[in-house]
Length: 153
Image (cartoon, rainbow, N blue to C red; front, side, top):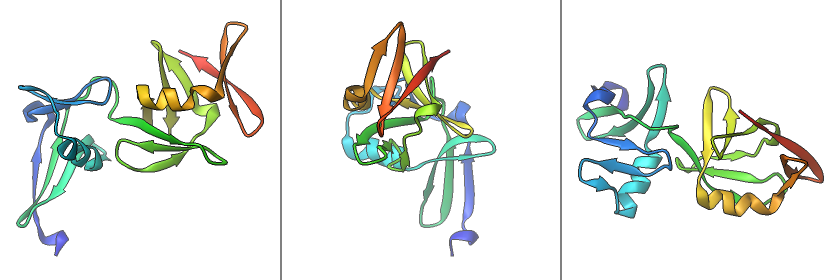
């Protein structure tokens, strides 16, 4: 049934909401406040060859709304401190921390994940800070007994 639904596509120039550089949703009235709506928007983020969009299925159509974002559409919202350290993204997807893929740009921590750039939220930085150390003007991440230098752009 899903493949027979009409698809409605809204370009980002017509979207009435956007994602700021800290991972917060906004519209013309201000920052979103309702937790269920915020979580729903994050869970609906998808990416295709045209960019990031929110994807939803309604009873009679499938909707794609491409949305503007200030920095990136993907954020680390939580860190699970297990053997490998698991990152929980704003989309609720869980991925393994790859220390060699970390980098700092303009005082923010990111991780490269293929074609995606994932930014660490303030809360995630607090959770991961116990595994970071600053030595000789460089920042390092300690994972599984190894130290990885975090590059700066």
